[in-house]
Image 1 (cartoon, rainbow, N blue to C red):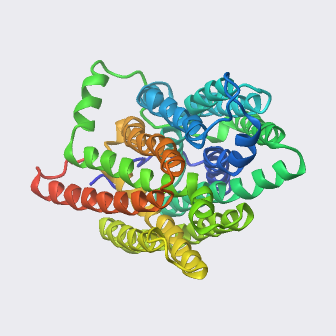
Image 2: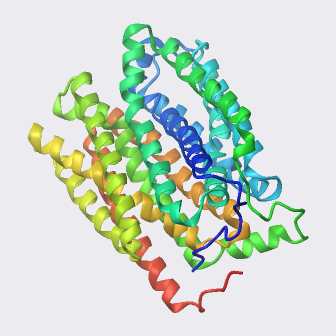
Length: 420
């Protein structure tokens, strides 16, 4: 397995302080990326009462979910070209450009009164959001010493989970103080400020050591690498596990209100507790990832616990505190598995094609994300809100089978390649 991607990549002048600055700078971008993924669900109820279609009818819950679906479709559409672009020209410029596009589109979304304008702007935002995973992995792998790599990826994941946690709290607060449109404008401005800061910090962000002119045949080499069974297994795992997570994060509030009669404030608090637990879980998961080589076992156990806890809520008869405990445990398991998942991808990827491999598995992640908001909204529209939880539980079980199959496939395949 490829355990040392950037051997010799760090020049002697790179200090510890500079490396920590890179970790937190990249982490801030990852925070914003995940913050924007969840910036709309806390506003859904306000938006449904305010937005109307061209025929004068209010926008349905499925229609609101479709906005998020378009966001993720855009990510999936450009993810592979972005990953290959990173392998070709480097991650720094791509990261900065993507953040400007993403945050600019979110800002403009707050200025539109058209539903279809909102859909279009979130599609553009999704294109900007496609840059983070390939760019972040390449910059961290090229800028950070190996003995700090575990901490770097753990902090990277904590920043993502913090973005998820902060979005419902911050967006609900801003919407209550102003309105949902102003909340989006302020959120977009946050990203624009960060993009300017990253632009001014380019000199401390390193790309891969192989940022020379590529030899012919990059497309063919990339294709062969992506079609290896273990990489395909990562793709399918990312698709199913992300679909399970997005089913909960996008419509937990609405589903809890529809079936259990919870107020928006109470359901939002439960979602916040779920996301806070994920942050704690990432810290625990980072420790586990440093202590074990059985990252697949970490994924299987946490996904199994998650599936069981969500199934309890899906029964429709759980008491309030049982729901809270089950969803908090679910959130924690989602966090615990994240560092092990990221390390598995990094170690299985060929060093020169890290950007493309990360982009490829992120397409799977995005397919899962894009498929669920509309489906979950449709479940609520047809009067079956508990199906949101049942789908999340079943998808977690499918993700477990992907992990098991991938590791068995790796055992049965040819010996691991040596990486110079």
